[in-house]
Length: 222
Image 1: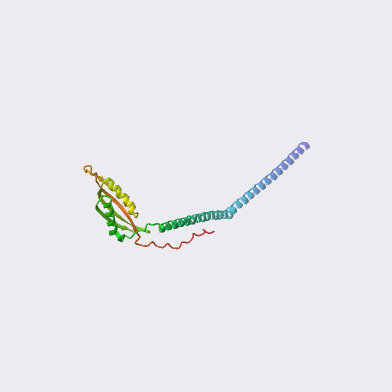
Image 2: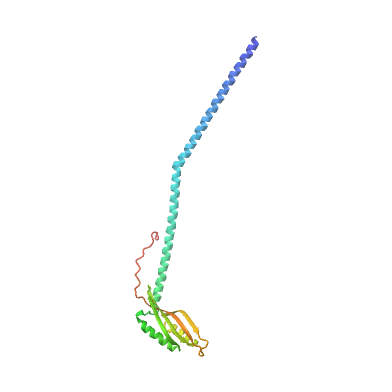
C-alpha cells in the first residue's frame, strides 16, 4: 500500500507545481497586455497632442510662406508696371516733341468758309467741277478736332486723279476717308460722278487736361 500512496503524492505535487507555472505565465501575459495598452495609449496621446499643437503651427507657417510668395509676385509686378510706365512716358515725350517740331499747324474749325472756298478752287483748277460740298459736325478730341466734308462733283479720269494729287499736296491736314465713282457709259467725254468723304483735322477747341502728378507704385523702389 505504501508504494501507490507515494506515487499519488508525487502526482499531486507535480499537479500543484504545474498550476503554479500556469498562474505565473498568466500573470506575465496580463502584465504584457497592460504594458501594450499603456504604450498604445501614450502613442495616441502623443498623436493627439501633435495634431492639437503642431498642426495649427504648420498651417500658419504655410500661410506665411504663401503670403510671402504673393507679396514677392506683387512686388515684381509693380516694378514691371513702373518700367512700362516710364517707357510710355518717354515715347509720349518723343511724340510731343515731333509734333511741336512738325511744319503742319492745324487751323481752327472757325475757318470753315475759307476752307470750303479753297477746296472749290482746287477742284476747278484740277479740271473737275463741283456739285456740292457738305460739311459735317465737329468731333472734339484731346489733341485735335475733326470735321467731315462730303465733296461731290464731275470729272474725267485724268481730272479726278489730278484732284486727288493736288488735294494731298495742298491740304496735308485733310485726309480721304472714302471715294465713290460712278461712270456713265453713254458719256462720250468719259466723265464720271464722284463723291469723296474727307476728314479735316483742326485745332482742338478744348485744351487737353493736365495730367495729375503720378506717384510710383508702392514697393517699386525697393
